[in-house]
Image (cartoon, rainbow, N blue to C red; front, side, top):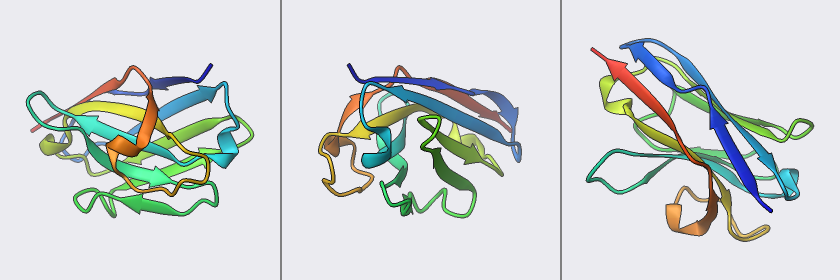
Length: 125
């Protein structure tokens, strides 16, 4: 079965950096669109970054230039490198797999059917 396990969250100060990792198993990792999403209480989950099977990427406007999504097909891991962190980046971050093989790769949560348990990122001012 599909399994996604996030790690790497934590607490940092404004301007700091973190790297999130998501170890995937149970499916053909290299063929699927993968994404990172985040959510804070009382707000909807939002797409932070996605990476398609061909390596193309897309980012939320507020993180573009600060965050980088990448993947290692040999290790079945997708990463989110986060730099210049701001307090507004504080959230639970989730890794997800697109529901459909070769089904496009947009950062819309509804298009992703498999989710990890999440890892908390807290940025203090």
